[in-house]
Image (cartoon, rainbow, N blue to C red):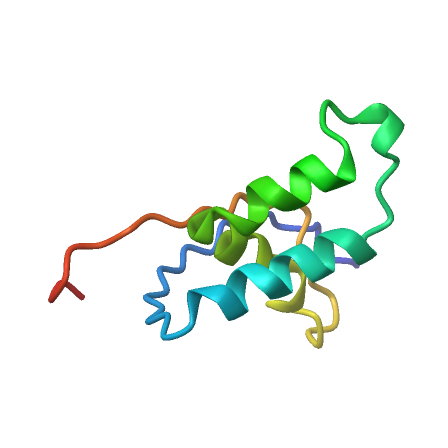
Length: 94
């Protein structure tokens, strides 16, 4: 007898201190440039998207978060959907 699959939501809040915003945005832009994206199907072109991403720390850091790696080594589990975003917090808040 097999057990039917179960779908669950994993909630996780991560606080990140960024000491070098330029390093974050540069890596996000680098990964965007190396991604296999069909730009003919997109509203932007690569250069416009790279410039916008390079100017947006929150979008860059959210884009670097990889939900697929969360359970990558767990047999029998697969991430089937995710929504990742970043928002600023007040200084001193945790």
